[in-house]
Amino acid sequence: MKYLSKALPLLALVLAAVNLRPGITSLAPLIERIAEELALSRALISLTTALPVLCMGLLAPLAPRLAVRFGLERTIAGCLGLIALALLLRLGGHIAPLLLGSAALLGAGIAVAGPLLSGFIKRHFRDRVGQVVGWYSFSMGIGGAAGAVLTVPISRGLGDDWSLGLAAWCVPALLTLPFWLCLPSRAEEAQGGDGQGLPWREPRAWLVTGFFAIQAGFFYTLATWLVARYHEAGLSLMHGNALFSLFMLVGLPSAWLLPWLAQRFDIRQPLLVSCGLGLTLCLTMITFHPLLLPELWAALLGFALSGSFSLSLVLPLYEAHSPLAVSRWTAMMLCAGYGMACLAPVLAGLGRDLAGDYQTPFMVLIAMGALMTLIAWALRTPRPTA
Image 1 (cartoon, one colour):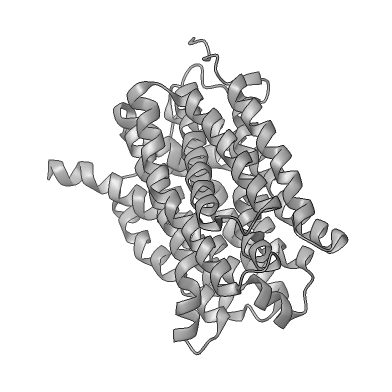
Image 2 (tube, rainbow, N blue to C red; image 1 turned 60 degrees about the vertical axis):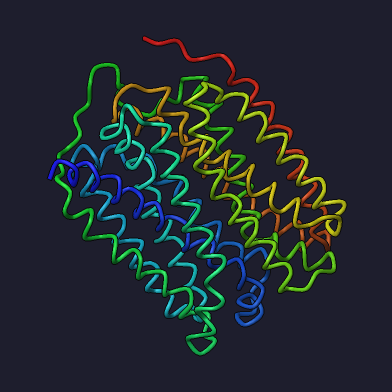
């Protein structure tokens, strides 16, 4: 029984993490087809990715308040139910407003779950933060990769109806919900030093947020337009989808490995800088030489981007010292970070419409990679402890 009491929180965490990305990544291999069938511009269809990210930013500050009132576990269970409902609504995805509405609802569920899952880790796994965050981000990577790789085969198996393929991802969320309902829940209490709001006046919180915002902007832009960039460069759609799948799958070991290395050897900042440099290099090659060793650059891109994401999740856990304080740091990181990141896929799509090619918006991504590296370098000075 004691073993089960320790295993259940980790299992619930892993299953919840798996459900945070398929609703977004499942759109990537189908986005050009959906745009054509619904007669939507690239800027407008990119809202299917941008709206969840925007909601994730706007609603993240609600998470600590809901945790105080309802408890971490019950609030997260409610978020999983909301995610399942949003994905189920995609059965009517051939109606454009309903497809976009499901994206907003999906973002609302993820927005509140994200900060609270970080607080959940701080509460239950205080002495194993790096290892557990590794499993958390690894599980998110599995969900994201599954959404990217399996949605097309699922759609084909369901009569080649893409709306059924998208809606099928409600099933994992519904299966995860009972695990969270079995966990005991208590309302989180504020502690001295937690503060009563988000740490907007902390300069270091803005560095953490800036790093997170850029890597998140990268992920959602690439999840939306990477396949289209490869296709524009002369690769077949099948080859482009294979490269995108490689990009997602190679990120899985990185999501687990880098947080473990960061904690084991206390090298968070060097790893952050390395990820920034690696992303800048890979984006440069995809922008200017997309046909030169595309598998190599897609694999390195996935490794560096997934690693930077998992490392960014670790940062608030080391900056704050209680579950509620971690939730507040994470809420600010997600609020401002996703608020900025949601613009990236839309602006990239608009840039493609205006410039006539994907190379121009991808050049902007290179500059963002350089900025991300500078922010990682600025994080080298540890935050003084109170």
